[in-house]
Image (cartoon, rainbow, N blue to C red; front, top):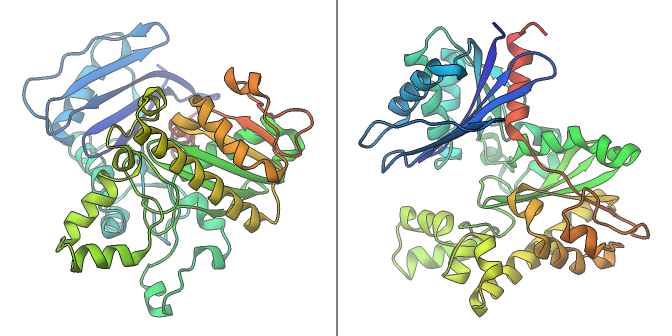
Length: 391
């Protein structure tokens, strides 16, 4: 039988999964999600033929019990396949890990030590790895890092204006969404031809949002920094904020560090601005002026940061939209491009409304494209390469 690769993206309350046949070219055969971990769980899965049934056990699940059930489900029925290994999205690789790696006891401990750098993501990513080590100790596992793609940046782009002792202690601009940007970098030649090697800004816009400036399809600068809070306005995250605001909240409003963290990560961004929703689709449909104000702030910050990255690149040849908002929200793309007309961007309104691969006019000095991202495919490819599956 053909070996397969299991791809896992574990968050605090969900585990997204996909299965790929481990022969070249890699082919996705199944995908799905267990949501509501720790609460009321739900399951959805499907393949090319449609939705696949599955009934979760009653009561709350944790990562280990959810994965145990998933393996039982995978082992049953027509989707049962031998597994070559499992590939994981791991948000933080720190300075040490600039490429995917096969998990062992030593490097898992070092990834655990990075949890303070990404407290809302890293522990949940690693929980799935630890659970699999207990459930299937013979199964090889690969960690793929969201920070790794940005290690190509020059030192000036990675360094914070802090004393060197703090920099040596790990206080750096790491950048995130690297697996998405890696996929887009690989897709640029098909979209832009020779222009793929030029000055490209990629806008990964979704509930989490960031921009990445690329030259030669390598990261030169990005809007996320030490944490996933930095840069753009996001679904529930604030984006860049004056650190003085944090001192004010703690001293004058008597907020604890945990309360400030909750505010900035979970109650700000589009949700905090609108007091309606963190979902751009909902806000675009709403007539409430608060929704419009939230969208305007999202667009303003995206355009502002695009200008900053254009300065880092000393110009721009192409702008690429990806992510849930970037791929599907034509009005948001139009508003951003309108604010960037000074860069020489001219949008084709019809192409944009139809979500065409290229949405700029022939006269536009900057090519504007939509490229759907696929982080799971990147993880599967790295897992296949590291585990040396027969092709």
